[in-house]
Amino acid sequence: MNREIVVTGVGAVTPLGVGARTLYERWRAGESGIQDGKGAATEFEPTEHLTVKEVRRADRFSQFAMVASDEALAEAGWKDELPYEADRVATLIGTGIGGIGTLEAQHKMLLEKGPKAVSPLSIPLLMGNAASAAVSMRHGLRGHSFATLSACAAGAHAIGTAARMIQTGDADAVVTGGSEAALTPLATAAFAALDALSDKGVSRPFDAQRDGFVMGEGAAVLVLEDGDRARERGATILARLAGYGASSDSYHLTAPEKDGGGAIEAMTQALRDAGYGPQDVVYVNAHGTSTPLNDRAETIAIKKVLGDKVPVSSLKSAIGHLLGAAGAVEAVATILAMRDRIAPPTLNYEHPEEGLDLDYVPNEARTLDINGKKAVALSNAFGFGGHNAVLCLEVA
Amino acid sequence: MAATVTPEAVEKTVTEALPQFGVDESQITRDATFEELDVDSLDLAELSQIIEDEYGVQLKGDDVGKIKTVGDAIDLVVSRAG
Image (cartoon, rainbow over all chains, first blue to last red; front, side, top):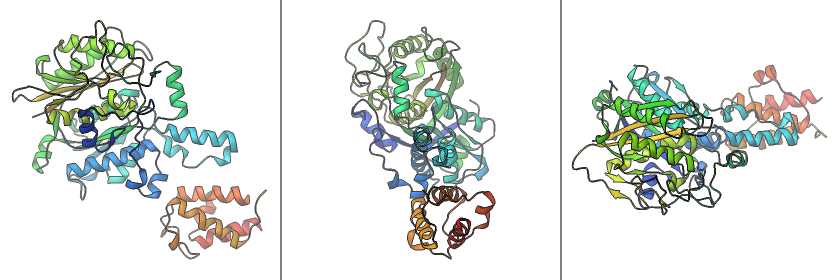
């Protein structure tokens, strides 16, 4: 990357609570946000953060993004005034599915009460760009604004694309991230029909007894800025987005390539973009879904790119799979963990499987012994459709 | 079966509907403008739907553009029904 991209604020709403620090600290402590086989954001009460009108005008996935953006902008010091011209600040929030809760509720109205009962707010709430729209309106951001849609890679794609916007000069800063609220009957039944969900309702990435993912919901938002501009205004820099890589498996609609090919390409690109070699990476925040196929293919990919010594863990063990929000939530958690030089744990890891022999940081967080080196981490996100997006994050 | 349209009935419907959109109930009078109440085109689309459901009176396009106050809306519904 030529223009330096820095992160100056983060925010999150997740099954571990409201707030980015809450997420990270609870994960580090080994707490789980999964109950009854799902990762619901149970501590999120929309009316504590939003007006009646704002709640009515936003699907749950947009509400998550709005609240996460408030936290991120406050941390960046943007709360009272934008530090840039409004048309130089872009908004880019990814989602896997968008407002499916609204879609399902309104489809029910259509079937039960007829077309005249369908709410005029249906489309503006369910559209996949609704979270980006809500965040840009909330904060008066008038630069480029749209959504990335790439299933479970959408959050990471948003962040990577946001960095490119700054690098090409289209923006000085971007409010970016991912959001998802798909704990709905249709989405749950559909993932179950694919045999993608854990029958036991347990998220145990990389464990021999893993049997699918656990669905979760939430959002994370980051403020990215041009490094020089951020320093000029005296901003506190949380991390650098040092590199970004993306690729497509071009292989199968849902299954990853068995030899990890597309993931290897994205990880390699991210490292090359950052100008780092495998020996520089001190931690990998894995996509680690707890599905038999992903965790095997991802292990192969990590070994190929980085060898078998680097600590690897999965946040999905604590909150489930947040789909289009996952890449953003995991990037936020990775940044906070790297600031503390901590590898947070992969929970529920008990039974090793042959060939899955990386250091998965089982069950307890560990201090990274990196002797004053920069903390360089990769955060992986892979989605249905064979979409791969990898972020290289660096904390001084 | 649509309800009987009287000014009082329509006023009650409107007064009960607007707070669901986030309008402060104490601000709602016949003379209050929708602009003052921060009721926009999306809110009016929802209000139109409620009115049609209750009274069988359709408010569309031009109609919605003409009404400025709560009283305008009530009068229009009553006149349409008559």
